[in-house]
Length: 226
Ligand SMILES: Nc1nc2c(ncn2[C@@H]2O[C@H](COP(=O)(O)OP(=O)(O)OP(=O)(O)O)[C@@H](O)[C@H]2O)c(=O)[nH]1
Ligand SMILES: [Mg+2]
Image 1 (spheres, rainbow, N blue to C red):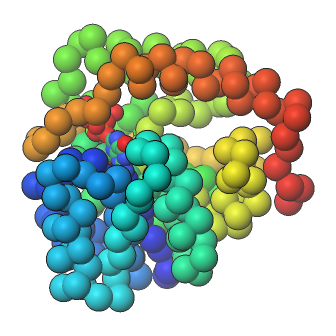
Image 2 (cartoon, helix red, strand yellow):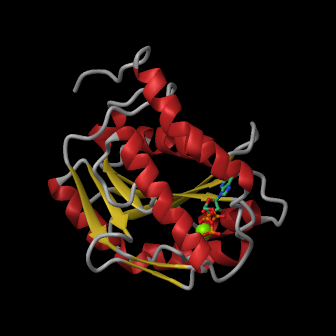
């Protein structure tokens, strides 16, 4: 197996090293940290981990405009160029359990996209305040209603794509026309244990507008045929 896990980081100094160590326990897994010049020195800690685990850990230091989505686009491009067959994403803050990674990788045998899902039977959310859970449930209902995507957990940040599925998307335009096959694997999402959340009103507003932008841009931009 040849899998890369992309981890975007912004101020995750205390999390990044134990998380990477936990991920590297799985055979055939490499890690790509995409850091946005974190003021707390996460990038330097990640460099140190990469030196210790040469060949299995890489760090991308972004210098252009900071952003979670932009970091993923850069990370995905890098992972595709590195020849990975499976490309995963997860948060740095242990909300996504590294022990569930093999379940996602295994399910990619039968799907283009696997979502680590909180909202299928067996999935769960732990330690979230009620208001945060309601926001997440509402966000999913909203995305499903606007885009007609059938997944129960469209907003999960724990996913695995087959390389071909991602390589067929025009990342420059950041528009997706859906996936041929999508499965959801139950996960337990746990509130971050170290560091600060980057969730803000701006992030929520952008998330509310994005599904409409995607629909509007479909008329002008189509992914290459598969
Ligand atoms: N490179 C990069 N990573 C980011 C940025 N903002 C957030 N991240 C990372 O993206 C992941 C998710 O961010 P969180 O702050 O945990 O957001 P969240 O999970 O929606 O919010 P919480 O549930 O409160 O933790 C974490 O690994 C962050 O370090 C950014 O601007 N650039
Ligand atoms: Mg988080």
